[in-house]
Length: 303
Image (tube, rainbow, N blue to C red; front, top):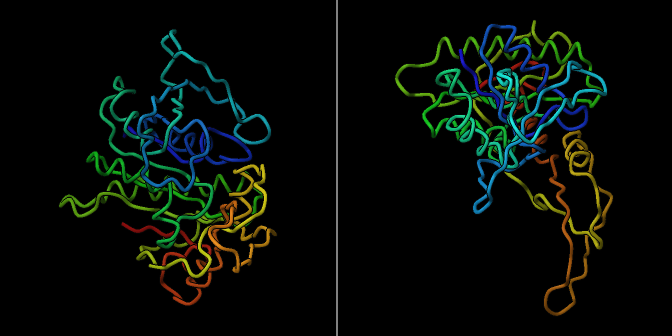
């Protein structure tokens, strides 16, 4: 099977995209012909967006031999390999996951034949419940494939700690490939399914745990939403902020409570979604939802 892989976390990086290299290796080891077209940097929370008016420029990336550890980045060139060995090159685009899917499907990899399946991920974090899924760049990539009439699977790794144990990642990759192969073999032929969303928790021996078909929990942002007011903008690393938010950490900035001024008060706003809304909605919904299944350490998928 010819699989086009994209993500919203960018090329291999121990800090921002720690799963993509191992995942691609596992797909290849399962006998698939894998093409890779990724954003050149993290594009989380961007949904199925395209950057209107921007000319997108690809570069050509060859992963290093090191899957884990400090040396994961590989080498990048401005022009493709002219030696005939370009099949191993990944294409990195200064665009969104959805744009990478369009470019990967229509403008690269034609020598391998038609793409049978687009796999978007594995995301650095879960994409359970509507709050996560409707904003996810990982889901956005899969949705873009679906509107191009190509089957798609979004894969997300739900981490509970940033201690990325290679053995746990390897097990999650094995579980993911098993689910991907199973879903593709049993894909409905009546056009009733365009894509699946799969969430694999990063827990020990996840490849021996149960796999559930669930519905996606419909939940909502409560008071406060996704931003907090700050007096001065910080130069915080967005990758670090994303990871802290996924782990439930909140900023210590204090909102401005002044209400007696006339007109608008100039403010800055920091991305700081209150994920307690998400976690409390999962608890309130009880057993059976997508969020609950992943919280309990099992793999879930939904169509």
